[in-house]
Each structure stands twice: as structure tokens, then as C-alpha cells.
Length: 222
Ligand SMILES: C[S@@+](CC[C@H](N)C(=O)[O-])C[C@H]1O[C@@H](n2cnc3c(N)ncnc32)[C@H](O)[C@@H]1O
Image (cartoon, rainbow, N blue to C red; front, side, top):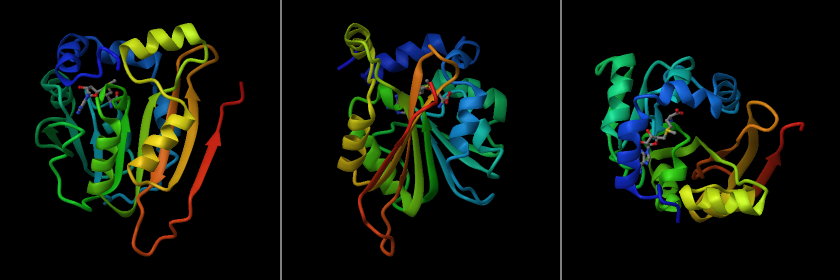
């Protein structure tokens, strides 16, 4: 397990990173990638949307282009302070400080659950994905962005020592274990040679939905 896959270490890390997060984030996760990911979901303006690990609100800002209000959750008070400065404390975003692995929401609350760039810090990602499934409505949509595993063994070892990096097979395993059965992965990248993100869209199993197992994969052109 990587050194930052520990909640208190990740909080300490973001105490300092929050000061520069919005300046360095675009090197690995930029507006074009966020908008491509948003295009993988269907929204109604009045959908109930949760952003897990919302941080300073970069993903939240994109979600607000599609829906009227967003619920944002993050475990870092320092990241949330930056988000409050952008959206206010009582604006279109209802913020909560909390843990992805113990979501403080009732079952079947959200039409869409989004999480960009946070899963790599969760010590038990399957537990958090189970929580996401629990709070999402049957038939709802879940989108999770995380870091795609480096192909080189040396870089993979280095990356794994820091946090969770995963490939499509591992994403399939985690989402299946958490109870999802319609899963699609897309590899996203800002430009050739830059870090790749793996973006997974999963449908929340519903009473009247087909439970047929279907997994799809797509890659960028290069
Ligand atoms: C790379 S930032 C991503 C922020 C934002 N989602 C974005 O797209 O820019 C990762 C965020 O995940 C949060 N985080 C890490 N572990 C968490 C946990 N267990 N529960 C809730 N938030 C967590 C961190 O505090 C941090 O703000």
C-alpha cells in the first residue's frame, strides 16, 4: 500500500498541497479532460449529484455547468477552505467534511456520484465504492477518475509506493466487488507522454434494470 493511502497522511499532504493545488492540478487533470469525462454522463438540471473528494472544487465547477446544485464531500479542511472561497458556504454547493469510506448520506440519495482524483488515496477503495453504490439511486450513474498504472515495471513500483495506480483489470475487480455490473473504462490523457487517467463509468444496479454483465474499454488514439 502506498504511503499516501492513509487518511491522516493524506490530510497532512493536502494541508500543504491545498496552497498550490489549483496551479499544479492542470498538468495532470485539466478542463478538457474534465469536460470529456462530464460528457460520459447524462444530466438533468435538477439531478442530485455528489462529488466525493471534491477538494478545491475543480470537478464540482464542471458539474455545476450541468446541474443546479452539487453536494461536495472531502476529508481535508484545507482543501474545503479553498472550495468555500470559490462557491461560498451556502451557495449551489452543499459541502461536508467526511470520509469516502463512510459517506454520511442515506441510501438511494443521488442520481449521479462523481469522484475525480481521490480514489488513489482511499485505503479501502472497494469499501468506498460500496458506499458510493449505497448512496446512489438504483439506475443512477457513477463516474470515478483515478491514475492509470504506468506500463514500465520500474515506474509502476515507484508509483505503487506512493498511492494507488490501477489498470482496467484492477478497476473491473474493484467495481465488481463493490457490486457494479455495467462498467466502462476510458483512458484519458492531456497530451502524449503526460500522465494517463483511467475514468470508469458504472451504472448502479436497479430493481428493474438488466443485471447482464457488460464491461467495455476504450483507449486514446496514441
Ligand atoms: C487530487 S484531489 C482531487 C480534487 C478534485 N476532485 C479535483 O477534481 O480536482 C484529491 C482529494 O481527495 C481528498 N481525499 C483523499 N482521501 C479522502 C477520503 N478518504 N475521503 C474524502 N476525501 C478524500 C483529498 O483531501 C483531496 O482533496
